[in-house]
Length: 496
Ligand SMILES: Cc1cc2nc3c(=O)[nH]c(=O)nc-3n(C[C@H](O)[C@H](O)[C@H](O)COP(=O)(O)OP(=O)(O)OC[C@H]3O[C@@H](n4cnc5c(N)ncnc54)[C@H](O)[C@@H]3O)c2cc1C
Ligand SMILES: NC(=O)C1=CN([C@@H]2O[C@H](COP(=O)(O)OP(=O)(O)OC[C@H]3O[C@@H](n4cnc5c(N)ncnc54)[C@H](OP(=O)(O)O)[C@@H]3O)[C@@H](O)[C@H]2O)C=CC1
Ligand SMILES: CC(C)=CCC[C@@H](C)[C@H]1CC[C@@]2(C)C3=C(CC[C@]12C)[C@@]1(C)CC[C@H](O)C(C)(C)[C@@H]1CC3
Image 1 (cartoon, rainbow, N blue to C red):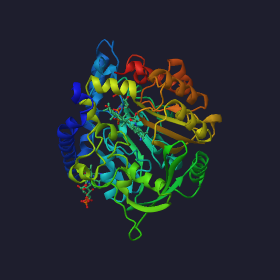
Image 2 (cartoon, rainbow, N blue to C red):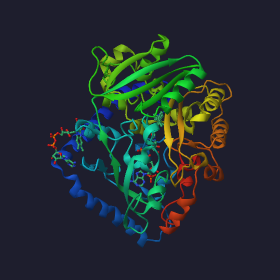
Image 3 (cartoon, rainbow, N blue to C red):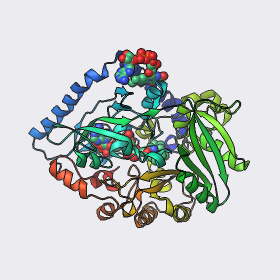
Image 4 (tube, rainbow, N blue to C red):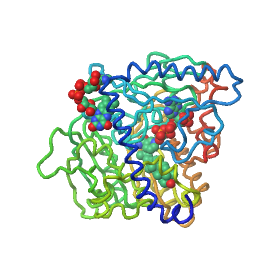
């Protein structure tokens, strides 16, 4: 879809075509998983589905093995910025595994298949009084994508990244056999899987910790009017040993922002309930900004699912560029219940015009840097792109084996700096600007989230991510012919 409808009138396509399509898509999957759970048919089907994956891999083994393998999930369906070019040429293995297999409340784990989404998990678990400790909040993120890539949320400062609450993985590896791994069983494989982007094997099941859920989240909004104040408040709140189940920051300029500290609660104080997930409610980031404007500290109680998916309706703040009047009160009351359009359908229908617009004039990155370097990092982002709001999400990084190591191999607090939008500086140049920021991140021993565009060279990439264990495991599992190296899947050159 090109021309005007691909550019400034994209919203026409979105409202009249994508929103209804997204609605029916959701209804179909919602009903399907509800029925499957009611019939309790998923656990019996699982072994059959694993065998189907094994069969496909063994067929590849019998062939001449001259192309690598990847999952058959089309690039447009994923929550990454671009599609992998390799999806056109690789041998595709279908992994149609979309079900929750078991909720074990004694062991406190949920076992699910890799295509289970975050929206599906919250619907299921929260209703039963449980939740997972780190719940990356966009509804359509999948367990498989989050394990193989990475996931983060505002509880990560207590728990770590998505990978750190995973108990075990089940994979079909290069020779078609099934391997399970955990901290005690095949630990090398267990620690190498996160950030391996499907280059060690096909994931078929994941066991994840669960914790009791409460009905509400008590949110305290703390407006800050200087960079020093914001960095100090954010750091103190993140460091509180016993307090704050969730900590999040939204910055509206280099010198202003709101730090939110949150805890689950069983009941709400009268008059302070705010069901922000309802279709007529303002976008969450706009709502948070009102606390800054009024310079008011405030307390609210948000229903748990609404809290988890607080940035979903506005796709963080990306929806502003897609439906410019989306936060208008009339639009919200009339059509707010249809929002957001599915990222996958947006990707599927975007034309060359939009692609080029985003290529030249849009910046989407999440950079994970040690909390102690947060101030410098924010100044670098201000100088290089000047995009606001900025999303701040703290997380702890334990000194585990694998791709990510904290400085000096000691558990360290990090912060994810998320910048999504149109740069406001005059000298923005996508490649050069991103490369300068990547260089800063490497210098402070941080990491780039690889769903976005990365312009690092192979050497720079290997400098950022420790490949020692990964290389070893690839060798022992004979991955060379079966899967490419991570770099060849995630670098900008590998994506279209
Ligand atoms: C996969 C899935 C998708 C769901 N999707 C939605 C949704 O989209 N929207 C929504 O509002 N609600 C959804 N739900 C929630 C569902 O409606 C509630 O879980 C239901 O209300 C549970 O109440 P109940 O008393 O009927 O449970 P129960 O009668 O105890 O269980 C209901 C069924 O689930 C099976 N079951 C129970 N525990 C497990 C387990 N640990 N592993 C496997 N099967 C189990 C039981 O065998 C039974 O057939 C979903 C649940 C699941 C599991
Ligand atoms: N809050 C957060 O933490 C957010 C995280 N993200 C990012 O989004 C991505 C997840 O998006 P999503 O659409 O769910 O996933 P994707 O389909 O984009 O998959 C991501 C990677 O995981 C691999 N993968 C997925 N499933 C399997 C499997 N069963 N077996 C082997 N490899 C698999 C894919 O391999 P292949 O290429 O072969 O398909 C791909 O390389 C992650 O990279 C995450 O970091 C994005 C937004 C927010
Ligand atoms: C760690 C966290 C919280 C990351 C959040 C990342 C989101 C803001 C990203 C993930 C996918 C993402 C890059 C996407 C887009 C915006 C930013 C998103 C949603 C959009 C919708 C922008 C518009 C584009 O035309 C297009 C449809 C291709 C993309 C799709 C992916």
